Image 1: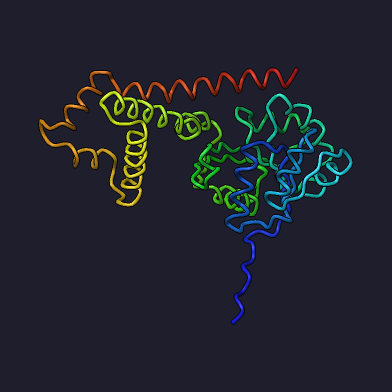
Image 2 (image 1 turned 45 degrees about the vertical axis):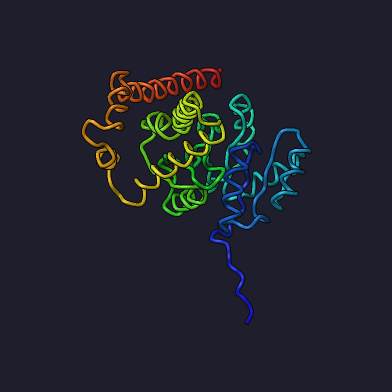
Length: 289
């Protein structure tokens, strides 16, 4: 019996305007989960033929930095993902605007850039999706926030969600909440890594080998996250289940409370969101000059 070949979920050409690590993470997810065939993915960058050759060999995608060919791709693609560096954004969007037709969907993974600023640089009220993925997207376990301009229709909303569902989970938010989401999931992996660093260091100081301490820490964090995910219980409820009165876990938690751990984490998230707003404001002022 012949096995039926699976059909990609989306039959759209998608152009990635920028070929950095986040663009590659999304492309990897799209191809691995058969959301889009590799032949329908085009990656563009400013000058690095070596980088594009590497991506073509790795994923079977198309790629170019030839100006004429790039313009042709940008004119015709139904979906364009903006993934260039912030410093290159103003020039790229001012160039892109005149090439676009009204129905083309623009998706941004550029941190700090508002929909209003993007549309201003494009010079057209293009349908725009603003996104904030995180680095775990590279292994298909990302968490991405999405905000839509009023020009985005229902089909385009679904298309954008399908793209980011390929690299993890998605949540739709009002754009003014994007900085808060940045503080939770955008930068959140770094907080967990920092906690893991401290746990590994404690194990080593207590006499474990670095390998033992790292292995135990990684599995503990993985197991705790899976427990929340699979049981559906609140973290507070699970914490109480493993905290015996006057036991060792309670003693450890009391030490964290003495360091104001709970409020410090909240303060860190808030500061991250605040800094994201500051950077976004500075970027917008710079781009509008």
